[in-house]
Image 1 (spheres, rainbow, N blue to C red):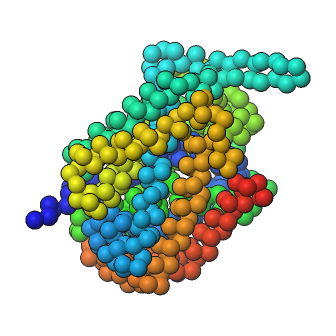
Image 2: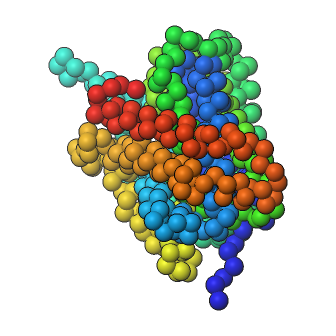
Length: 461
Ligand code: PFF
């Protein structure tokens, strides 16, 4: 007899776990940087509009598919229509690609946390400028750390190991329990740090820079980058919400739960902006905000080194980032485990070991991509960036396009309405239909095309 599928005990467990997946590195590091780049308030506004329309629609669809079929993406699409099982396979590949490199970055966060907790936070601001003839090159602490071999591997292994231990305990005893502790702590920390930063001398200017719309920076790219960020941030089109939906009880109101997850996700992203933008603005200047990826590891430690109580704030900040990263990597790992378990009916422990081994193998090139394997590039990208590009910029829009077309025209939105209405009336049914059938596919094609043009340098985002 088949074992009964595990489930979240109730709505709170589901919402916190799904919000845990959504709130991640994307919210804390990527969102503020994009907001600064694309015109502050205007980016926020576009993002919120997209979240309550596109984000809402796709998340509703995925959770409903998961709950309806009771399966993770591969099984779910196959159960709905054999011919479209390929969407499930494509969707399942994405978390397999993301989890390893996400854990590499999670490992970096752990290293920085260890530095701040041990009182050595100031060391992370070290840098040296080497003059070589006409050229000068600045090497920072971060560059030195990631170009090493032993340490990046060690922290990466630690991060993935913690993730897998939680997943091993299962949905109720692992993921739900951990999310119920980590998510409230995450919120308190976000609020505390954001308020602390806002009270720093001169921070108000940065707050205004963040919130005030700069229309001159608005372009179609504002919309496209907000949309790309939204999908990544809400963990959409990667099979995650289908998997979590498959653990949701039939009496939980899906629409309400989706609204709550969105508020969580957008709220933390907004607070992250409030923590980072004013702080960087005051202690570095506008130019530092453009640092992009290195914002968190190069610019922020300098800020922590300057502000009063910075060691403690730095440690709290990296705890916050680590919690966000872990709850997201847990959702990625759970999806991979669930897909393998649904497909091959193997024991959870063995599946976890397989996933751990696969992750170690796939993650090593990303962990070593800045040192030992520094010379190796794929389409001009380092391993980590390549995996990120392939999963988020190529596969994610493709899966999302197929999902919309499948639901809109093959399965028909009615199937989703029926699932949603098991627990409560579906209020935004019309909005859902229009977006899933017509608007989302068009926008998703635009995201796909622009990211391809961007990576080949034909058109700069
Ligand atoms: N949503 C997470 C973030 O914003 O960092 C990242 C993420 C988690 C992406 C899980 C994809 C995923 F499946």
